[in-house]
Length: 113
Length: 114
Image (tube, rainbow over all chains, first blue to last red):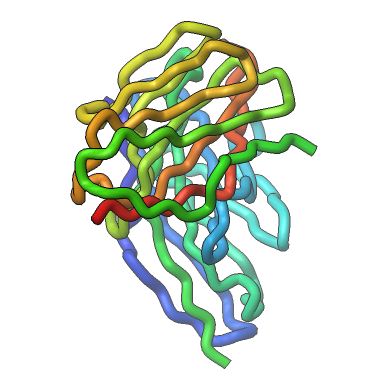
């Protein structure tokens, strides 16, 4: 069965510092991978997605993610964090057939001044 | 822009009540989903539907049912609400079957069962 693991429940970074959020997946075939962001009291918004091709994908708000098949990882990065990036971040994989999106438990990002 | 609208942002219901959560999408999406979100557990799939009148159980369907009479509307029903169903409920929709792409989410309904 597919699964997604986000090892960090929460992370605190200083404004202007770099960020990396970890995501590992378990999936037998080529995965379709996503990162979503949820601001407080809101639904989820897509940051970026990976289907195939270039393993470094660019998303909105200055985020990028790198797919590493050998490590079964899809880590999210941002070179310089802004206070408005404080939110919860979810990594997700879509299963074969494209019906179900399976989410990780989420990583809550705190940004300190 | 795709819009997924959930009928209520906040609901307070009593134990044993029958509760309806409504979700409407305006992009002619075939797939619709109901998730439950709890701290530390991420989003867990309750039910999904890939066509009108079609439904499939997700990972935690117990205590819930769904209805999809029209393509744009997907309802989640708590037959007899219990306190352990206090949670945030998120509705989502996505593109046609077989075309993998992102899911679009509503704002969520925070349900409290007292």
